[in-house]
Length: 268
Image (cartoon, rainbow, N blue to C red):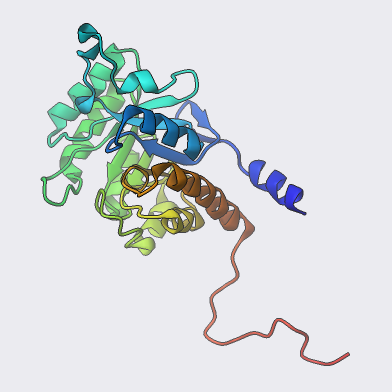
């Protein structure tokens, strides 16, 4: 029986797409806040992810000139798709510039755009985000747009041509989980492009819950990097993502106010 379950899980909707890119793993993992580059490498491996996000503003691109290594030396480009993100950008000009640098470095044209409003909440600035996405889509980038859990803004981003919308579960690094599942459900109903939950995950159950809502994938960072044992948590996130997806496809029972007996009502 266990072999059957494993085969079913491994073979269930194994591919999903963002633009021209196709992936198997539905867990995307960030690279910030780890104690060492080696720990980053090991956590990525444990998570089973294929897409690794990198904040280019925080990569020491001059390290090699000093005979040192930087983060990119610990991410195998033959194994992972690097997703440059614009973390730390607070206006559209900076976000656009970072994406153009990623292209110049030949990392690729798949980018995650996030333009934040201010330091205290790190909530996305919807107007600046939308404007940045319009420019980058016109320049041929495959844009994954980090946004609020507002269905109207998600629709506007999709209309602007982004390849995926990424509503937050809760504020970045908060660990609060999915605060507004109803809005995520509305975005899923309306979106013509893949929907991923990004930000706010605290533990494995948050990932499973997000996947059970029907999102294509989950992106997280702090929940692994900030855990007491990041490697163990990376394993937990991997299995939670798989379990949540399998549960979504299996179809949960409806919620009811009163009990329904699971045994026959009459004796034999």
